[in-house]
Length: 170
Image 1 (tube, rainbow, N blue to C red):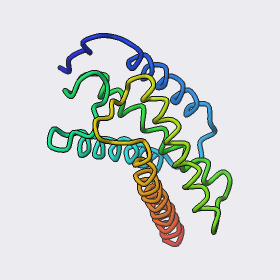
Image 2 (spheres, helix red, strand yellow; image 1 turned 30 degrees about the vertical axis):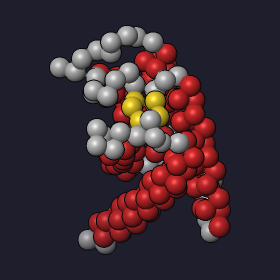
Image 3 (tube, one colour; image 1 turned 45 degrees about the horizontal axis):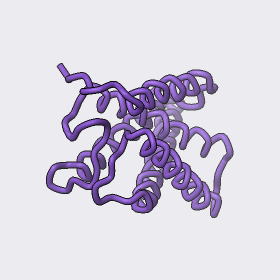
């Protein structure tokens, strides 16, 4: 069983309130994707966050800590559930606004800036404690992650349409 945090303070409240807010928005928004695509997009967001956090915050690299300690506790796990809807929202609004052409680059850049603003808020609530990392570095990470997120969505979208078309012709 994962340990509880040593102390319950603003970072745990940030995660709890954040989870309530993002999942409320998630459930209120009209559904736009097949369930498999939704799950894949949300797993992508959570998995990529975990990979980057563990690469950059590992004892060998140690650029930052998240939550209260360098050890994994229950709220570290909750934090990954918190990340999942952001990937979904990124794709949701990309599709809703029918972003095309040069707009894709602008959309990724604006969302990356939004990610940095959200990360800054998380820093203020002591979710992240930087030890060698700087918020500006996150911009390039967000650019990379969100570009891959769009590529994954586009691949899923083409794949699901080709399977749907193949089923209709049989």
